[in-house]
Image 1: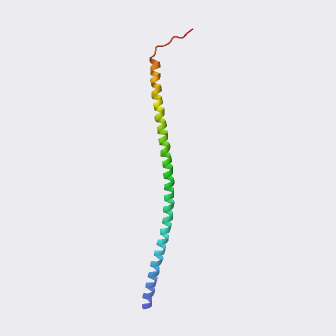
Image 2 (image 1 turned 60 degrees about the vertical axis):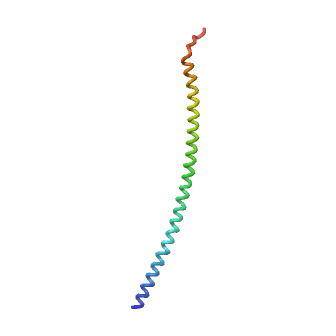
Image 3 (image 1 turned 90 degrees about the vertical axis):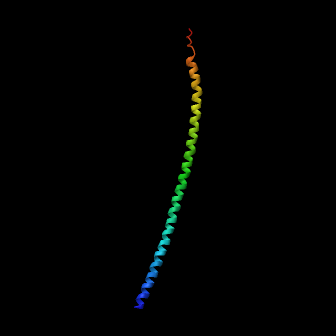
Amino acid sequence: MLVTKRHLMTARTLGVAIIATLSLGACATYKDDFATINSRLDQLDVKVQGAAQSAESANQSAQQANQRLDQIEGRVQQLEKAPRRTPRG
């Protein structure tokens, strides 16, 4: 009977050791997964920052174009209000 209890204790200890080893191995796998995910997130962050800069540049260009159109519109209105010239000839 003592031998059986010893075997049971040894088996239990061995089982705990195996589970602990497998758990630690799984942590290493998760570390690799997290590293991969973080790398992808970093790449996406760079792309998003680039897109934001492009959008800001496009916005500035659009604002400049609107300012030029506003300037031209004033001149067009002046020309439309001016008396019509009769053709020569």
